[in-house]
Structure formats: C-alpha cells, structure tokens
Amino acid sequence: MQRRRHRTKRDNNLGAIATLILFLIVILIFVNSALKPVIMNMAESYGKMSVAKAVDEAVRELFENEDIGYSDLVKLTFSKSGFVTAVEYNSAEINRIKLSLSNSLVSHLEKLRASKIKVPIGSITGNTYLSGRGLSLRLRIMQSSVPVIEMISSFESEGINTVLHRIIIRITVETEAYLPPRMARFTLTRDFVIAQTIIVGDIPSGYADIG
Image 1 (cartoon, helix red, strand yellow):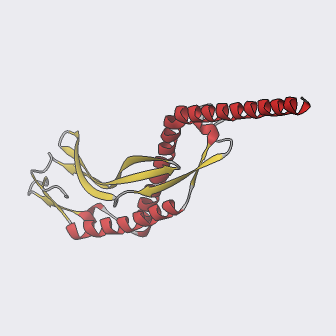
Image 2: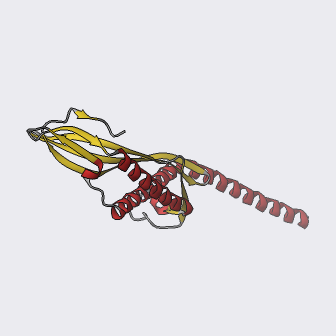
Image 3: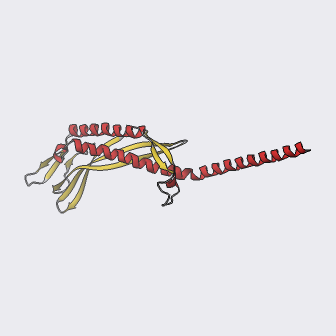
C-alpha cells in the first residue's frame, strides 16, 4: 500500500515536470515566432550599418591614396565666347579608379565576412534603457554577389548661365545577414561625389554619359 502511494506520488511529480517542460517549449516557440520579425529587422539594420562602414572605409582609402581631380576625369571644350560646348571623359582613368576601388571594397567586405557582429538582446526589445545591453547574438555578414561600382555624371542648374557638374561614384552591395537559423537579404546603395565644377553656360549639348 505504501509502495503504491509512493509510486503514485512519483508519477504525479513526473507528470507535473513533463507538463512544465511542455509549457516552457510552447512559450519558447511562441516567443521565437513573435520576435522573429523584430530580430531579423534588427539583424538587417546592424548588417546595413556594418556594410555602409566598410564601403565608407574603401572610399576614404581611395581619396587618401590618390589625388583625384576634376581635370583628371573630364576634359571640357570651350567655344570662342568661353562657354563649354562639349564634355569628354577620361575612360582609362575612370576604369582604373573603379578597379582600385573595387579591390579595396572587396578587401573590406572580406574582413567583415570573417568577423562576427554582436547584436545586444536588449536592443531587440525597442526599450531605450535596454538598448545595447544584455547578452549578444552573433551576426555574420556575407556579400551575395560582386559589388557594382558605377560612375554617374550629374548636371544641375545653379542659376543663370551656370551649371554644377558632378562626377558621382555609386556603389551597390547585395548582402546576406546570417543570424542562425535565420537569414536576411538586403541591398545597400551609396553615392559619393568625387569631383565637381561649375560650368558657365547651359548644359553642354555635346557630352556622353560616363557609362
């Protein structure tokens, strides 16, 4: 009789523990499902900031290592009255700059891939006081394709008979952010003005796009 009571009590305890474990599993599944969009949005946000920093570093190194001027990239043709009639681009120099920047950019993105970014759990809550606090989730960044580097020519009217001509580098990076077992894909595009000048007159009729 005593054994039977002891067995019944033990079975009840095991049943209570099993129920508690099942309850905790259900709670974890619910929390994971509820936080999934928030976590991945946060992962994408941290990923974009990290990739943007890598792109900025690559462009900064380009300007530190090379003296790039407007006249190195563009040749202007003037009329007898002093107005610009044609704009020609130095294709060889532009391609050299793009190659140099591409090598630097790939190097910085490889370093980013080799490292792991920490995403504080407190930041996921959206609470200002908890932001940046608590244990960290490990985020890995990897580019999903070769970065695209474009040179863009921009003409903007600055007033009567004056035009602002800019040479812009546009960098596009397609990236994947891994926060096991989840993954988020995003595209980052950034523009940098590398040279500019004021042209007297209207937008020249004789110019070709850099591309």
